[in-house]
Amino acid sequence: MTEYNHLNYMLEGYDVPAILVSADYEILANNQLYKDQFGDIDMAIQPKCYEISHGYNRPCDQSGEDCPLRAATDSKHKEKVLHIHQTPNGKEHVDVEMIPIFDENEVLKFFVELLKPIPLASGKADKQEVVGHSSVFTDMLDKVTKVAGTDASVLLLGESGTGKELIARLVHMASKRSDNHMVAFECSGLSESLIESELFGHKKGAFTGAHNDRKGLVEIADGGTLFLDEIGDVSHSTQVKLLRLLETKTFRRVGETELRTSDFRLICATHKDIKSMVDNGDFRLDLYHRINVFPVFIPSLADRNEDIPDLVTHLLRKIDPELAITDSGLRLIMQQSFPGNIRELRNLIVRASILSEGSLVDEAHILSALSLETGETLSTYRDDNEPILNSLKENESAYLEHLLEQSDGDKKAVAKQLGISLRTLYRKLKA
Image 1 (cartoon, helix red, strand yellow):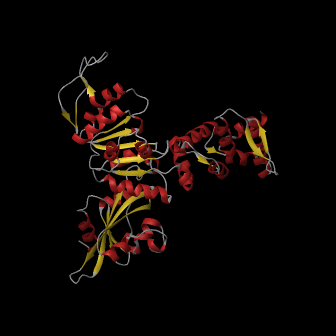
Image 2 (cartoon, one colour):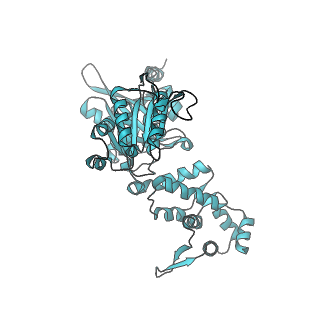
Image 3 (cartoon, one colour):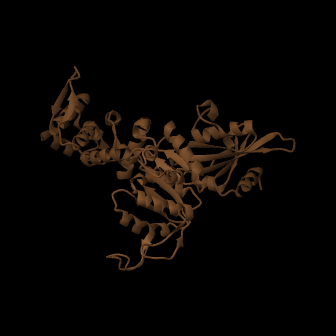
């Protein structure tokens, strides 16, 4: 067995992708899980970890990122950091743990680097659901990955449409309970009796329409995760029942005297200012402390505007892997505000893709998609920045004329740029 193969074999004991790194950043070996997840490494080129993981020509800490190797060198203990790695599948969020190895004279010789891909934020690009690289987003993701491995209750805070249920799923999938159910329940808009029946279940005959015994979501979540969305909308009476559940992990089905137990991990979410609700007496302080063991604020789209290009590309791929967007179309999206956050951005992209009729979404399609929101005419601007209101057809015609002028009348080139057939372009021009 060669030295290289021997080092590889040593890393097979780890249940996550692992590499062996020298004190001067050279990768010396990798295990099979690393090869399966990130691809093989050509050891003959004496690869550096920062070259392979990030495409940098110098260490991470000299490229504006935290470097776990440098941190472990300084502390002489294992260090962890969340990184975005360049992989054959594209950019992936990876939880990196660096373990220093010393010789008998306590001289630092090697590092074992363990790479744990973040669920929903790694794997093939078309399978990823958590997308973003902004500092506020990665800081949030770092907190989420840290708490995921514990059993602490998590409270997700942030505006509507920011993806709180998605983050709740990430917490569950990265936890020790991932092999069991995650049960989600929307608390808003339901009567108190219906919430109680849904959560705790009911006995046959407990009320009109209860024709059979029924398990509640709390019982189904046993061994897994219970996600209560919009927890700020529950009544005081329901808050009391939830507090009792969380304190004792016991409950009774509606109409039943038998006491049941359920072992679940709790994740709650709300878009409301729940701390102010506590101060105003609208939410119980004792329940607040029960659910707020580890709060995580999900940033709005306005706070992570730099993530919009990645999100647009991701949303287009989810619709059709062949779809793309022009630079002018993306610039127009970047100029919009999205109070509905990712949910609103997703709606815009779906509308634009429907209007595109081809594989390329451009500025005209975005303008048309924006106009569908209100049914009003589109706005373009003259040289003096005064708005001109046009109909959808006029706006599309103006855009086509603009493209033809830019391409010196080459209709074939314009059709290719728009991602439509030449025949479709002729039809549009004729109309």
